Image (cartoon, rainbow, N blue to C red; front, side, top):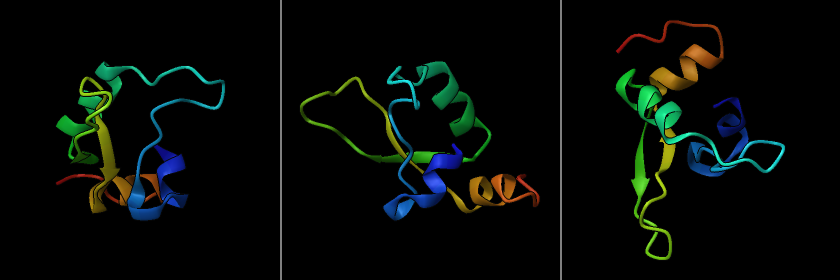
Length: 68
């Protein structure tokens, strides 16, 4: 998630630094915690969750409170 801090709009990368796709379970857990939200649908890859950080996600990454 930390890589989203430097991305336009807080977009979360779909792949880690090694090129491995980020687990859907990880993304869903972050969504359930309120740290990210779906951003838009990808028409060429409808099964991919394209998400962006929420303010709560930014706070947790920057060492502040992460609760909703």
